[in-house]
Image 1 (cartoon, each protein chain N blue to C red):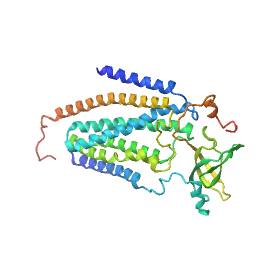
Image 2: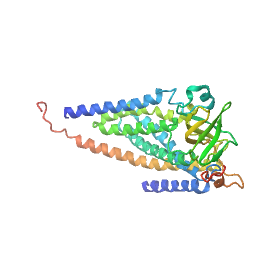
Image 3: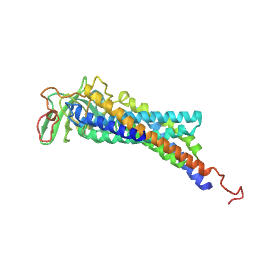
Image 4: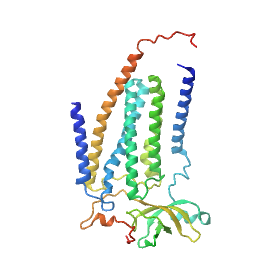
Length: 226
Length: 151
């Protein structure tokens, strides 16, 4: 079953990529370079979606205090950081031929880079805290706080003047391109879901191992220690 | 746990949290007037009058059709908003999408003679994606300017 999920999701992603690269028409202004959209946009969507899951995990941990919600917050933040980096890198590659620059400090780009730094910082910070319960508590608070930037990233192109275009909609895109975009978004979601499942299992296994290690109370002399 | 190690860890934690809070604060409130105005329009630039001359700024607008001239590696064109026009001079090679009626953002400064000297030229692409119309070759629309051909 697990193997079927892995092979199936990768197969679907390959089909979606084929659809985006071959079946969808080229753009009349940008030619073929616009096809980077079929990875760039799904990666950006998944970033926002997985950071939202991380927010939910943080919130539920603070309410319920169950390690599994902490695991969810961690695993989704890790995946979101990867797709966030992917969206930034691909956006840069797309920016050079269309805008003429690899990078500019426009509101959308700046807030997205900050998002990457914030969640990267969140993951680094987790490494610094050894006590699982304290780590989960601190991380959950920060997970709630930094999620505030996600709606800012989404709305940045509407609030402020930017070089980055505003969101496209099915009315501003050719129908075949819309299909290709949706296929790729769901395909990426599928692959990331499989990764998330395995990452959660790993997190649980690690927590169990660490829990088992600390179960027999360590023989530390009480007091008087120099 | 060693007290010194605990203290170091805590200090590091405080610094990490402070950094993240600062980043967030910067996004939320940091210089809303200045940093978040990514570019000014020709009307806004010209309204500043003399003080605008020589000050580096980003200027955004639409390329006035028929004003693009490319000679001896110097590109001149005009950009406009609803009411005002600013002539632009640059030695930059424009991106391939550059043509009449497209949105552009230029970085540079206004000169005393009223021309805008652009050190960087960026093309703003809209959110529209359409297949080429019948008989259109995307490669022809999307062509190089470097050879000196008029778009």
